Length: 297
Length: 114
Image 1 (tube, rainbow over the protein chains, first blue to last red):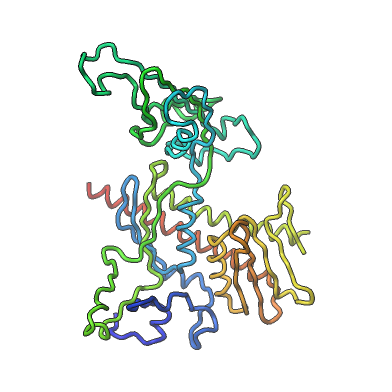
Image 2 (tube, chains in turn brown, red):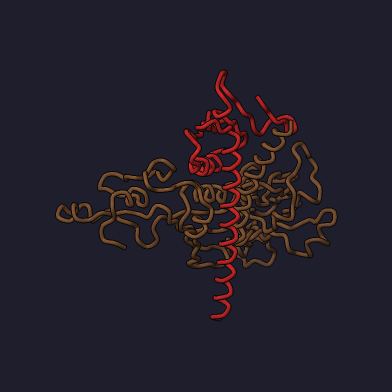
């Protein structure tokens, strides 16, 4: 990189960090702003400049760089990853019996947060107003646990693990109840919570839970952050030293984004990113179809 | 002006002020927010025919955006809107292809190393 960048290049390509604020944040390379530059949208130019570098990829998380794309579009992907990739989650909880000290609504809230391993691409959205749910849009789960006293516990023990049976209700106690042809389509035990060891409630002898849950396709549930620096936290410490202050200029490349995607375990992170890109394309297509329909009228 | 009925609710409306020509239209996009609004605005602004392009969320409790386009040279505003949507689709397609190719390379690479 050249030691000094001409002012115009800097305005176009860098976000400058000053001691007390950030400058040059907004994208300005639109047609007409800079004489001598042709800034019209050019797909070939974008394709040449754009690249993706995958830094690491594991089962549930991945980190990759996107270079050569504008903040508006990178942010759109981030927003979609966080909020608009469909997943299956518990929506309706039918409590037939709950004699534990956890209130119904608290328990229902906790159940709604448990990630369920079921590929949302194989399900449809439930029609609004449909109470029952069919095999194509609903997964039925059951949680039935009763706590009893352990007759074989030693006399003076005060450890609940010895005294009681079934006193901790974990997510592994949630069982799948196949409806319709789901048993054939999905195989024996393939729909279950992602993690076995989420503690849902604690019981004592005589208390029981008898709950049926309906799990539908909805929006949400991944964690995505767009970092603008990796290990370099871009600390502005250097600006506190008076003798260095005027000699150092800190800048960030405007179109280089670091994505760190962490999945809840339902879908692999690379699948999540592909789904997010598909969601954005579907939005565009929807409005293009609307435009075409309006033209026809 | 033109509203398209989908079930009971329109998804896209076009509002044109009295006396203005076809080049200045406000599109009302329902069920949308900054996700589509900002990315579409960026691509429409990259069009040299555009005099003005901006979007706003009228009220945070209503999920709709007002997307305004003003063109110069008598170009009807629907054209850059359509072009912006097509460009955004192209960008997404290219990002998707690049990403899938890189994931495949990365997986191939890590298997080769095992």
